[in-house]
Length: 502
Image (cartoon, rainbow, N blue to C red; front, side, top):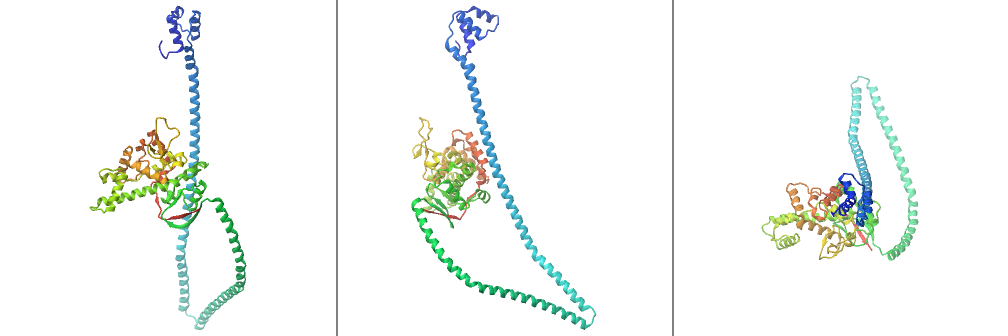
């Protein structure tokens, strides 16, 4: 029998095998028999119908359509859920953009009011000089008219003397009033001096008592809790490194408020404070607000990425200076040997070293960190500080739970978050899989264009097994979260110091 035949065709073939003339006559006369009629004729001729005929007929006519309907329903539900999530994301973005526009409008209004006030203050001196000139000219004209008119000398003398008498009397009255007022003020000061001294003496004792009473509970709390407290003091320092303290997300968010770390300011000023966390807070995923979770993640990772980029660019400037020198010192030669090993450059080729030694766009680094670490909530990020999901076969790592039995790779583990960022940038700058990334980056630099994430994402197909689908996801993350705003961000020179008291 032929394979993949319908149940009816199989019954017809069975009829031809057993030479059932009744069915053959019907088919010759081109009369269509139903499946049930063929079954009755075969049973009448005492021909047994195999069981597998019926099962295949049931599968084709009942089970397969039902399974298709089920899959269609599941797909429809998933699409509806996706549409719902997209709708909520749009609402969140709309809220965020609206608040940003309102704040921007208020800032512009405040600046406008300030400019109007300054302009008004600038007008006041001109207005005063105009009024003074007007009255000066008026009095000059009056006195000139008096002088030029031909009147009796006695009457003119009387008018002038009367004018000066009025001016003198009014001046004396005003001076006397001011003197009397100042005298009352001086008198009141002398009268109130004694009660001020008494109040101070009475207040001193309760102040001392309050300090003594407060000291004891502070000591008890420290001994019982034994937890680090974060205190903020305003001092200029180069950077702040927070050690492994298992900080809670609430503590981290409060710390950002204390040091005035706001992403809106970072987007506008293009400056970020060098606050370096050694690990993610373990309860980051407990935040109900998705937007707050993303902002906290970006605030933790952004300084690490910018710091590594600035270090690479400093090394690049130093390399450019050394490559133009005819003679180099022993320390400079040692530095060159170290960088050649770090960037895996053979035969001391400084041009190749310059080609590899370059920054990674901040938006790409943030997008890949978010994708690979689940916005800082994945098991690899929390247990091994692995932000970028780099594989290893011989180093210390964490085995994936859903790894195939025939595979032996692990996710590379790091002591601190910054080590993960450094390893990621070295990977993109040295591995053969990302040669197209480095070539396109060099083309942008040669044309004196900005090295941006959206211009280079299409070169990272080899980073994940999904290929071009992975690059689409990166583009989506960059655009939805406006990560391109952080491309030109650099570190500030001074920040508020964070002291950790245990």
